[in-house]
Length: 91
Image (tube, rainbow, N blue to C red; front, side, top):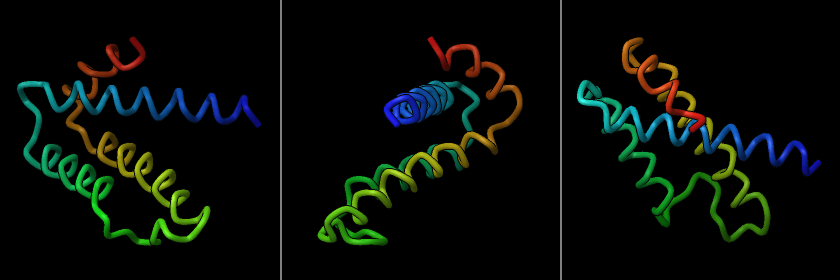
């Protein structure tokens, strides 16, 4: 189980780094900046799809939705930005 958690953390961390580098790229599209801002607002907002008051399931939805949203944003990156940021992702 810990091996899976470690692998998941590595993937999420890599995706978050790639998103960060894509946002800092001079040719970053406006929709990427807007989508990232909305994702950040979702994370810090008290409004939630499943309230955090529920013991476990309230936190699990954030742990699932945020990585999926990051992956979705990265999927639609323009090819030149994706290629420029892919090399910096792991490092």
